[in-house]
Image 1 (tube, protein in one colour):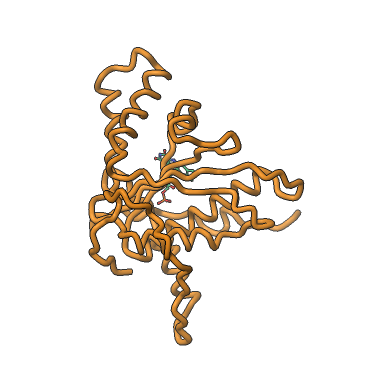
Image 2 (image 1 turned 90 degrees about the horizontal axis):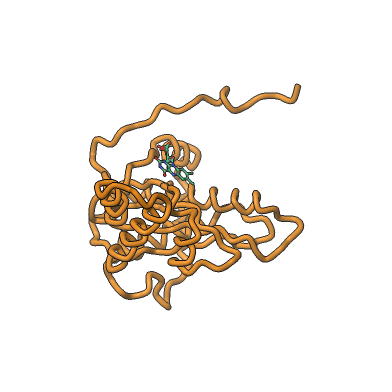
Length: 223
Ligand SMILES: Cc1cc2nc3c(=O)[nH]c(=O)nc-3n(C[C@H](O)[C@H](O)[C@H](O)COP(=O)(O)O)c2cc1C
Protein backbone atom coordinates (compact mmCIF):
# COMPACT_ATOMS: atom_id res chain seq x y z
CA UNK A 1 0.00 0.00 0.00
CA UNK A 2 2.84 2.34 -0.71
CA UNK A 3 2.05 5.63 -2.35
CA UNK A 4 4.00 6.53 -5.45
CA UNK A 5 5.09 10.15 -5.18
CA UNK A 6 3.98 11.23 -8.61
CA UNK A 7 2.76 14.78 -8.99
CA UNK A 8 -0.94 15.27 -9.45
CA UNK A 9 -2.08 15.84 -13.00
CA UNK A 10 -5.19 17.62 -11.80
CA UNK A 11 -3.89 21.11 -12.62
CA UNK A 12 -3.72 20.26 -16.28
CA UNK A 13 -6.30 21.51 -18.74
CA UNK A 14 -6.01 18.20 -20.60
CA UNK A 15 -8.97 15.83 -20.39
CA UNK A 16 -8.57 13.48 -17.46
CA UNK A 17 -9.15 10.45 -19.70
CA UNK A 18 -6.61 10.39 -22.53
CA UNK A 19 -7.88 9.08 -25.84
CA UNK A 20 -5.63 6.01 -25.69
CA UNK A 21 -6.57 5.05 -22.12
CA UNK A 22 -7.19 1.32 -22.11
CA UNK A 23 -8.59 -1.10 -19.60
CA UNK A 24 -6.10 -1.90 -16.82
CA UNK A 25 -5.95 -5.65 -16.24
CA UNK A 26 -4.90 -6.70 -12.74
CA UNK A 27 -1.59 -8.52 -12.56
CA UNK A 28 -2.15 -12.24 -12.04
CA UNK A 29 -0.56 -13.35 -8.77
CA UNK A 30 -1.17 -17.01 -8.17
CA UNK A 31 0.47 -17.04 -4.73
CA UNK A 32 -1.37 -14.10 -3.20
CA UNK A 33 -3.71 -14.71 -0.27
CA UNK A 34 -6.58 -12.83 -1.86
CA UNK A 35 -8.91 -13.00 1.13
CA UNK A 36 -6.19 -11.77 3.46
CA UNK A 37 -5.32 -8.91 1.15
CA UNK A 38 -8.92 -7.86 0.65
CA UNK A 39 -9.81 -8.04 4.34
CA UNK A 40 -6.66 -6.13 5.29
CA UNK A 41 -7.42 -3.48 2.69
CA UNK A 42 -11.04 -3.07 3.79
CA UNK A 43 -10.26 -3.25 7.50
CA UNK A 44 -7.54 -0.63 7.35
CA UNK A 45 -9.42 1.90 5.22
CA UNK A 46 -10.77 4.96 6.93
CA UNK A 47 -11.83 8.37 5.73
CA UNK A 48 -9.44 11.29 5.88
CA UNK A 49 -11.09 14.71 6.03
CA UNK A 50 -10.47 16.86 2.94
CA UNK A 51 -8.70 19.55 5.01
CA UNK A 52 -6.11 16.92 5.98
CA UNK A 53 -5.45 15.80 2.42
CA UNK A 54 -2.40 17.37 0.82
CA UNK A 55 -0.42 17.15 -2.42
CA UNK A 56 0.51 15.05 -4.17
CA UNK A 57 -2.80 13.64 -5.23
CA UNK A 58 -3.02 10.67 -7.56
CA UNK A 59 -1.51 11.12 -10.98
CA UNK A 60 -3.70 10.49 -13.99
CA UNK A 61 -2.82 6.79 -14.25
CA UNK A 62 -3.60 6.26 -10.57
CA UNK A 63 -6.87 8.15 -10.85
CA UNK A 64 -7.88 6.01 -13.81
CA UNK A 65 -7.05 2.87 -11.81
CA UNK A 66 -9.37 4.10 -9.06
CA UNK A 67 -12.18 4.80 -11.49
CA UNK A 68 -11.74 1.40 -13.13
CA UNK A 69 -12.03 -0.16 -9.67
CA UNK A 70 -15.26 1.81 -9.24
CA UNK A 71 -16.47 0.48 -12.57
CA UNK A 72 -16.30 -3.08 -11.14
CA UNK A 73 -19.30 -2.36 -8.91
CA UNK A 74 -22.38 -4.58 -9.22
CA UNK A 75 -24.64 -2.98 -11.82
CA UNK A 76 -28.06 -4.54 -12.49
CA UNK A 77 -28.59 -4.74 -16.26
CA UNK A 78 -25.40 -2.78 -16.77
CA UNK A 79 -27.15 0.61 -16.79
CA UNK A 80 -23.99 2.44 -15.63
CA UNK A 81 -26.10 4.79 -13.53
CA UNK A 82 -23.32 7.10 -12.41
CA UNK A 83 -20.44 9.24 -13.52
CA UNK A 84 -17.71 11.29 -11.91
CA UNK A 85 -16.91 14.91 -12.74
CA UNK A 86 -13.39 16.07 -11.99
CA UNK A 87 -13.08 19.59 -10.59
CA UNK A 88 -9.63 20.57 -11.90
CA UNK A 89 -7.30 23.02 -10.19
CA UNK A 90 -8.15 25.85 -12.58
CA UNK A 91 -11.85 25.37 -11.69
CA UNK A 92 -11.45 25.72 -7.92
CA UNK A 93 -12.19 29.46 -7.93
CA UNK A 94 -15.42 28.80 -9.83
CA UNK A 95 -16.26 26.04 -7.36
CA UNK A 96 -15.64 28.42 -4.45
CA UNK A 97 -17.88 31.04 -6.08
CA UNK A 98 -20.55 28.38 -6.46
CA UNK A 99 -20.34 27.28 -2.82
CA UNK A 100 -20.63 30.90 -1.74
CA UNK A 101 -23.58 31.53 -4.07
CA UNK A 102 -25.36 28.44 -2.73
CA UNK A 103 -24.81 29.61 0.85
CA UNK A 104 -26.13 33.10 0.04
CA UNK A 105 -29.14 31.65 -1.70
CA UNK A 106 -29.94 29.39 1.23
CA UNK A 107 -29.37 32.08 3.87
CA UNK A 108 -28.95 35.63 2.54
CA UNK A 109 -27.76 36.86 5.94
CA UNK A 110 -24.88 34.36 6.17
CA UNK A 111 -21.97 36.09 7.97
CA UNK A 112 -18.81 36.71 5.91
CA UNK A 113 -16.79 34.25 8.01
CA UNK A 114 -19.25 31.46 7.19
CA UNK A 115 -19.19 32.39 3.51
CA UNK A 116 -15.42 32.14 3.61
CA UNK A 117 -15.69 28.69 5.20
CA UNK A 118 -17.96 27.64 2.32
CA UNK A 119 -15.41 28.92 -0.18
CA UNK A 120 -12.50 27.19 1.55
CA UNK A 121 -14.06 23.78 0.86
CA UNK A 122 -13.33 24.24 -2.84
CA UNK A 123 -9.57 24.27 -2.33
CA UNK A 124 -8.94 21.40 0.05
CA UNK A 125 -7.95 18.10 -1.53
CA UNK A 126 -5.59 17.89 -4.52
CA UNK A 127 -8.11 15.72 -6.36
CA UNK A 128 -11.77 16.61 -6.18
CA UNK A 129 -14.47 14.61 -7.94
CA UNK A 130 -18.23 14.97 -7.95
CA UNK A 131 -20.24 11.73 -7.96
CA UNK A 132 -23.41 11.94 -10.01
CA UNK A 133 -26.30 9.45 -10.05
CA UNK A 134 -28.25 8.93 -13.26
CA UNK A 135 -31.90 7.84 -13.12
CA UNK A 136 -32.45 6.96 -16.80
CA UNK A 137 -32.92 4.96 -18.94
CA UNK A 138 -36.19 3.75 -17.43
CA UNK A 139 -36.03 0.10 -16.60
CA UNK A 140 -38.80 -1.50 -14.56
CA UNK A 141 -36.32 -4.09 -13.29
CA UNK A 142 -33.95 -1.51 -11.80
CA UNK A 143 -35.31 0.93 -9.25
CA UNK A 144 -33.66 4.21 -8.39
CA UNK A 145 -32.67 2.64 -5.10
CA UNK A 146 -30.79 -0.11 -6.91
CA UNK A 147 -29.02 2.47 -9.02
CA UNK A 148 -27.96 4.30 -5.86
CA UNK A 149 -26.64 0.99 -4.51
CA UNK A 150 -24.51 0.68 -7.63
CA UNK A 151 -23.12 4.16 -7.11
CA UNK A 152 -22.43 3.40 -3.45
CA UNK A 153 -20.60 0.22 -4.36
CA UNK A 154 -18.65 2.09 -7.01
CA UNK A 155 -17.61 4.74 -4.51
CA UNK A 156 -16.51 2.14 -1.99
CA UNK A 157 -14.39 0.45 -4.64
CA UNK A 158 -12.89 3.81 -5.51
CA UNK A 159 -12.12 4.55 -1.84
CA UNK A 160 -10.52 1.13 -1.44
CA UNK A 161 -8.43 1.57 -4.56
CA UNK A 162 -7.30 4.99 -3.32
CA UNK A 163 -6.37 3.46 0.01
CA UNK A 164 -4.56 0.58 -1.66
CA UNK A 165 -2.56 3.02 -3.75
CA UNK A 166 -1.54 4.83 -0.57
CA UNK A 167 -3.89 7.82 -0.67
CA UNK A 168 -6.42 9.14 1.79
CA UNK A 169 -9.95 9.93 0.63
CA UNK A 170 -13.39 10.88 1.88
CA UNK A 171 -16.93 11.34 0.63
CA UNK A 172 -18.63 14.61 1.58
CA UNK A 173 -21.89 16.14 0.55
CA UNK A 174 -23.67 19.15 2.06
CA UNK A 175 -26.71 21.17 1.18
CA UNK A 176 -25.08 22.99 -1.74
CA UNK A 177 -24.64 19.70 -3.61
CA UNK A 178 -28.39 19.07 -3.46
CA UNK A 179 -29.40 22.50 -4.75
CA UNK A 180 -30.79 23.36 -8.17
CA UNK A 181 -28.19 26.10 -8.54
CA UNK A 182 -25.43 23.56 -8.09
CA UNK A 183 -26.93 21.15 -10.63
CA UNK A 184 -27.25 23.97 -13.14
CA UNK A 185 -23.68 25.19 -12.62
CA UNK A 186 -22.29 21.69 -13.06
CA UNK A 187 -24.41 21.29 -16.21
CA UNK A 188 -26.13 18.18 -14.89
CA UNK A 189 -28.82 16.70 -17.09
CA UNK A 190 -32.44 16.50 -15.94
CA UNK A 191 -31.97 12.80 -15.18
CA UNK A 192 -28.88 13.38 -13.04
CA UNK A 193 -28.43 14.12 -9.38
CA UNK A 194 -25.22 15.23 -7.64
CA UNK A 195 -24.65 12.93 -4.67
CA UNK A 196 -21.33 13.76 -3.05
CA UNK A 197 -17.77 14.87 -3.55
CA UNK A 198 -14.85 12.48 -3.46
CA UNK A 199 -11.70 14.13 -2.11
CA UNK A 200 -8.41 12.31 -2.64
CA UNK A 201 -4.87 13.19 -1.61
CA UNK A 202 -1.91 12.34 0.56
CA UNK A 203 -2.86 11.62 4.16
CA UNK A 204 -0.85 12.46 7.26
CA UNK A 205 1.18 9.48 8.45
CA UNK A 206 -0.64 9.19 11.77
CA UNK A 207 -4.15 9.33 10.38
CA UNK A 208 -6.91 8.38 12.79
CA UNK A 209 -8.30 4.81 12.77
CA UNK A 210 -12.00 4.33 13.35
CA UNK A 211 -13.60 1.76 15.65
CA UNK A 212 -15.92 -0.44 13.64
CA UNK A 213 -19.16 -2.11 14.66
CA UNK A 214 -19.11 -5.89 14.79
CA UNK A 215 -20.81 -8.40 12.51
CA UNK A 216 -23.41 -9.00 15.24
CA UNK A 217 -24.55 -5.40 14.81
CA UNK A 218 -25.64 -6.15 11.26
CA UNK A 219 -26.25 -9.87 10.82
CA UNK A 220 -29.28 -11.73 12.10
CA UNK A 221 -31.53 -14.67 11.21
CA UNK A 222 -35.07 -14.59 9.87
CA UNK A 223 -37.23 -15.09 12.95
C1 LIG B 1 -22.76 9.93 0.24
C2 LIG B 1 -22.03 10.30 1.50
C3 LIG B 1 -21.86 11.63 1.85
C4 LIG B 1 -21.19 11.98 3.02
N1 LIG B 1 -21.06 13.29 3.35
C5 LIG B 1 -20.40 13.64 4.47
C6 LIG B 1 -20.25 15.01 4.84
O1 LIG B 1 -20.67 15.92 4.15
N2 LIG B 1 -19.57 15.28 5.98
C7 LIG B 1 -19.07 14.29 6.78
O2 LIG B 1 -18.47 14.59 7.82
N3 LIG B 1 -19.20 12.98 6.45
C8 LIG B 1 -19.85 12.63 5.33
N4 LIG B 1 -20.00 11.32 4.99
C9 LIG B 1 -19.40 10.29 5.86
C10 LIG B 1 -17.91 10.14 5.62
O3 LIG B 1 -17.62 10.07 4.22
C11 LIG B 1 -17.32 8.88 6.28
O4 LIG B 1 -17.88 7.74 5.70
C12 LIG B 1 -17.59 8.87 7.76
O5 LIG B 1 -16.93 9.97 8.35
C13 LIG B 1 -17.07 7.59 8.39
O6 LIG B 1 -15.70 7.46 8.19
P1 LIG B 1 -15.09 6.11 7.65
O7 LIG B 1 -15.25 6.14 6.15
O8 LIG B 1 -13.65 6.14 8.11
O9 LIG B 1 -15.84 5.00 8.26
C14 LIG B 1 -20.66 10.96 3.84
C15 LIG B 1 -20.81 9.62 3.48
C16 LIG B 1 -21.49 9.29 2.34
C17 LIG B 1 -21.67 7.82 2.00
